[in-house]
Image 1 (spheres, rainbow, N blue to C red):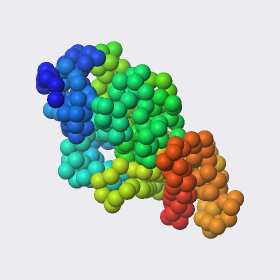
Image 2: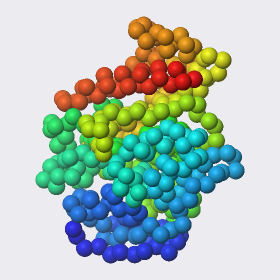
Image 3: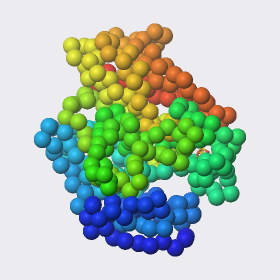
Image 4: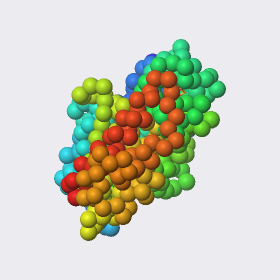
Length: 334
Ligand code: SF4
């Protein structure tokens, strides 16, 4: 590990005043220290924000819920309001990492965790995300866990978060503070697609700090987070689905579908959601075997445009089946 300067921030404004290209914020340390130990990241200054008062989970006046950026994943998953009103988020958190990691990992850190692409961590491998312009070893390498949607010839890494997939399905908003003041960004706009600049992973400006995440008041209807992984615990998603259905008078009034493990950011399936509006749930759920049933069409649309690599074509079919199965189960609960 390279030497670095360490400062403990006394308040938010003091933290953002230390902004610089070689500065990193430190919260739960579940990802940054690994990256620093391997010298994938070599910040000159680490600003410890872990003692800032940003860990509350609070009701908002509009009926929504605010998750402090330093609230731990365990804390949020155990919060009664989250479990009751946003069960898809609680389930996603409980399917991420180990209990020990969830006790340390924070809301803000979860948003900013970096890909687990093996070549990103291997300093001897070409990686545009780690060293812009170097190339991408995953394109011709072992790319079983990589992206099938939203990738580019510069980078095919996936975003590793479970929590962010649920936040995307919930239409959450990320609140930021920087040297220019405060602003809010929809979670679905927070992470960038790689394009030709895969090292730029979010829309954060230099030194901007995630202070909280807001969940909207609107009740999303029955929801679930379903994750397929290589082993039963402590593994990143091969494919995951966060979905909710609101049913009124036997028809779908609103659908939300987000995929994880398949793209460089949580992947909202907007066109698939549109297809479902107005579908009769009894009809759709009963038509499991029918080729043209609503959930099958939506599942097909959810992976439209997929471009698999040599070793990960299975993800397309897996995602299709997982979306369809999740929707059928949700319709059965409505
Ligand atoms: Fe690097 Fe992205 Fe290629 Fe992985 S997929 S080696 S992170 S550029």
